[in-house]
Image 1 (cartoon, rainbow, N blue to C red):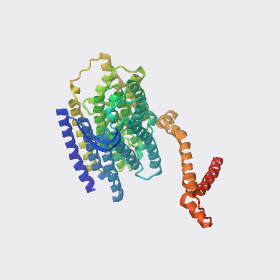
Image 2: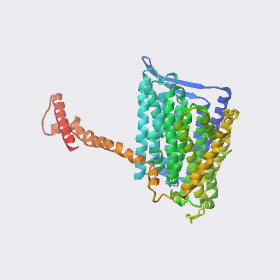
Image 3: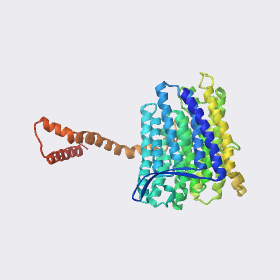
Image 4: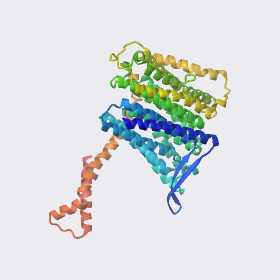
Length: 554
């Protein structure tokens, strides 16, 4: 426990240092690149790059800050034996190291270290509780992430043709572009790959707060911000289409969902779609601002939900949370604060980026379908937030009759996070010179935001009244439009076929009839095979026989 506290305090100090450094780099408009040439073969250079500028330092500050608060929060939350705590602590530290590696690297060589590290450690954290449900969620997580990793490996092969793994220097061809988008889409859970994010909620809540809200899922977006100059225009329209659909479906599903952690997960998914769609329109600084602000309040939201679950003995059902505002006022106040920030309530955290983004949407050229998607999904964002606030404020059931005093460590870390998020959101807004912008729009567009919020409130009230127990539509949307079942249909048979081949064939037949085992068997029966070719011939015959048996069986 003590080492977690010390680690949290040291990382908090480190994060402040990173912030000051990033401000200095921003002031002098400076950028530093360190290169270490490991070795070169002919014209191919294996070089390790580290890129330090104001953006990467600011992102490092964000990750360190959230990590320090969550480690202090975990002292109270993860009330487990010492071995479990050690495993949790070391996994989190490894995750932080991989994240740093990813942030500071423009080169493929160091990106693959960070990227694969993130995927594997997030798998270890999802299966942390060692239940069967956690294991299935972890498998879906790692399989979908490995799709993106394969894109990264193929991209490394393509880049090797140019003579270096430094991606900053080249123009992309179509294949490389496709692989880059595949990497970003799998990590940031866009629509074909979006089922893993709600399933990863099997992880402990501090893990969800750090990994699945603010750092891991924004890695794909951070990568695209870095390489945005390499994106072609036609790819940007594809990104816009997919991300606006993601935002719409995630918002719709969150309105029907009853599991509290999954509601927050779907809200993360919809915000990721939101950020991707702004990125496709070319507003990179705006994306970075929203990414920064969103990471702050979303991790805070997860911390609040986790502390509620801690007191409710692990119950996640939203219908049990009626009247929590009157039992735990501090936590409920912070949760309502984060919900209002998510909606973009004036002068709270999310307002600075969200209001600006919506005005930029009306200002820029885009597909009509995407505009409608974005407007409807913004209404859905307001509606599920309002629904959650109504549940907390209503004196309907008051199910929690066992009253425990509020935990000081959790509340302190959440309050510090809340104050910092309010300060830094305004600071980042001013630093990036967004306060100098004045967007001239027609009055009807300016008032359209109020209309969207009002309609969202009406929708939220209706969803709140609408019980899902007998509703087929609700069941359909809660299972994310049966997306998980579709995945099972697509890849379950294929994976089982591969697994059976591995078990029956690779691990059994070939091991038995090749190498030392075969020589041992021949020696046992006193058949001295002097010629090695004879041994190989026998092995091939046995291989063919068993292949025939295997094919007949299936």
